[in-house]
Each structure stands twice: as C-alpha cells, then as structure tokens.
Amino acid sequence: MPMLTPVADEDGAPFWEYTARGELRVQACAAPDCGELRFPPRPCCPHCHSFDSEWRLMSGRGRIWSYVLPHPPLLPDYAAQPGYNAVLVELAEAPRIRLAGNVVTAPDAPLNSLDPGRLRIGAPVKVAFAEVDGVTVPRWLLERG
Image (cartoon, rainbow, N blue to C red; front, side, top):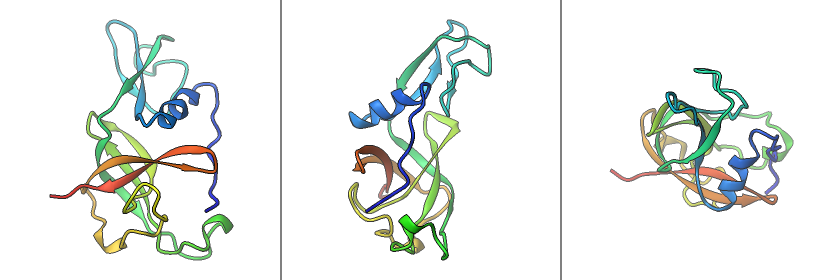
C-alpha cells in the first residue's frame, strides 16, 4: 500500500533509526537540571535552552487523545482505504507528547482494518511497528481491558 513517506531531517533522523529497530524513543534534554521530553525533535530544549539531548526509550503505551475518520475525497495514496482512522496518542510517560498514527488490528494490517466504532477517546493503546515503503512506522493496537 502506498503512503506518504516520512522525511527524516537531521533532528528527527534518530527517531526513524530507532523505529527501524522496533523501539519507540523520544528526544529528551540531557541538561542535568532539566530532562524534559520533547517531540517533535529539535536542536534546543524549549524549557532550559540547552543543546544537549538524548533519546529515551518509552514503554510504547499510551491512550487515544483524539482521532478523526477522514471522508472522501481523500489523498490519492489513501483513496482505496476509506474507513481508516488518524489518531493522536498521548504517551503514558509523557502526557504532553502526542504522536500521530493509525490504530490497526495488527502491525501489518491495512489502515482500515479496525472497525471505527471501537475507537474511543482515552482508550489504551500500545505501539506496533510496520515497514511501509522502506520506512518503519509506529502504529497503534488497542489494548484489551
């Protein structure tokens, strides 16, 4: 399935390198008195203005903060998959960080694999990774319970 392939810039390249290894990591300030997590990645900490950073491993768990169900007309790469969702997931370790993605039934399932009626704001999700057009992207699976 074609998709809009992410473009890695210098600041965000490590994010994509970690997803290729099946890891969800978020950039953090490495200044001793700060440690704030930040996304999207950028060269300078918006809290303390330090240029020191590191990439912290996340649990891969979160909750659906918001979602939409796009309706036609859709972008050409997505026109064959009506009924797909686009979600913002709030990370468990970092409630101010929200990652965009899709909730699917399995990592390699089509974007429209989940019944939209199962989506709820606040629903717990966990990350899964799928390779699409040579890029490993995070997707989300609903957690039971």
